Each structure stands twice: as structure tokens, then as C-alpha cells.
Image (tube, rainbow, N blue to C red):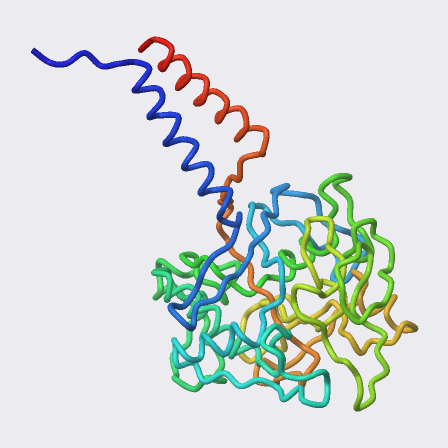
Length: 344
């Protein structure tokens, strides 16, 4: 004869499992992904960008801009020197960085600069393949700074005729013009576009580092004692979506070519957002939604252009509210107390 299941014991066990899972979820950081291994591991934090199929902005450059038909995620911080160095160690990428000795130093949390578009694309490919995914960009030659080859009909699973640069099967990418533009300038609260990537849309106040709202790292003197860019986690206030450093610190490259065609690996690539050396006089233009620039994919931009990674996954780790943890904990304790009373 089988034993009768004690309902209180069962419910207590279930609640304990639920609470443990919720506790572990709360202990882990939402949207954080670990790459590499052992001493060469590093984390990237991604912020969900919702409001799929939002309207275009008709006031910036290019025009229209910013409409994205799908949910995705954007790296909360710029890619750091440490991330590139560790990817080089694990993946043998051979990416070189600009020597920032005279511009604030080569600290591990300083944004990675001196990286060409082609090198950035190889770094992104490694993020994908090292986590069991598919490469975003089609490199057919081994040189770290060689240009990509377009995906074609011969690559059935990867080819997207509307964007031959990017594989259909990939996850981590350099953000497209629209993906970057939306993450910087779109306000999900009002469902309108701001002129600047600040929490209220106003031109940010210049700082050398920090996290205060409506600030950005720019306006530095441009001399040999220039403090240079700030560490990626202290690079000014957040955009409306909660992303740091989209104004100032370092310019950021995009996947999209400047003419918006993506029809040749040789094309100039777009970059935007301003840098620490932008003067206050020019900042209103350089950091605004109406300013963009371009560079060859083989050019490294010296020490003022960096990169940020986007994820095409719309999944985000759900972190329970403290009130939920308290409620479930109280329920579990009540059941345990009641069960104890029954035994007396």
C-alpha cells in the first residue's frame, strides 16, 4: 500500500523550491551575460529595448530613423579594454587597442578605443561562437582587419536581403543605425524622440566622470594632462531606456554603412554620440540626434571611437520584487508553523 502524501509537506517543499529559485534569481543580475572562462571571464549587462514597431523620428539625421520592428537588448555600458583583452586571450583574436597613456591611462575599465570596425565585428563574432551561437558577420579571410564578405543566397540560413551584413541566425551584433538611434533618443514613456540621450532630453552637463542624471563626459581640454574617457560604469547619466554613455565619453560605431545601403564590405561605417574631447561649444551638435560621422572599416579612429554590443534576444531575466519575496517567505513560514501545530 502506497504512503499517503502529506499536503502540508508537499506545499512546504514546493514553496521552498520557489523561494530558493527566486532568491537565486535576485542574487543574479538581470540581463548579465558572462563570456570567456576562468581568469579571462567577463560580464556584459544588457538592457531590454521594447516598444517594438515604434514610429520613426523625422527630425534627426538620417531621416527617417529609429524605427525597430522587434524587441532587442542594448549593452548598458561601452565595451571596455578588459573585455577586448580577455577575448584576445581566450579567442586569439589579435585585436589591438590605442595607447591611452597620455589620455588618462590604460585602465581595464576604460572604454576600448583604437578598434577598427572589422576588429569589432570579429569580437562580436567571438561573443556568438564562444557561447554556442552563430557568427554575425561573414569573414572569409583570416586577417583581423580584413573586410567582411556579404552574406548571399548561397548562405541560405544567414542571408537577409534587407541587410547582407548581418546573419539571420545570430544574437550578438554591432547595433544598426536604427537600433542605436532608438536606444539613445527614444523615450518609451512619452513615445517620442529626444534631441539628446539624457533622461529628460536636454543637453547634458559636462563632467569628467560620474553617474548623475543628465550629465555626460565631454568638454575636456584636449591637452597632454587630459583625463580622457571615464570608466564605462561612470560615464555619465542614463538614456531614457537606462543606458550609460550614449552621449560623450567615446564615439560609438554602428553596424550600418553611412549611406545606409550595407551593400559592400568596403563602405564607410557610421559612428556617433560624441566623445570626452568634444568642446561644450560643439557638444550641442556632436551629441544630438542630428549628428553622425563615418570612418572606413579598416580605420581605428585613434582614441576617440569605441563600441557597444547589442543582443537580438528579447529575453530578460525576471527579478522578483522584494515584496514578492516577503509574501512567499511569509506563506512558507506560516505553513511550517501550522504543520508544527498539527504535530502537537
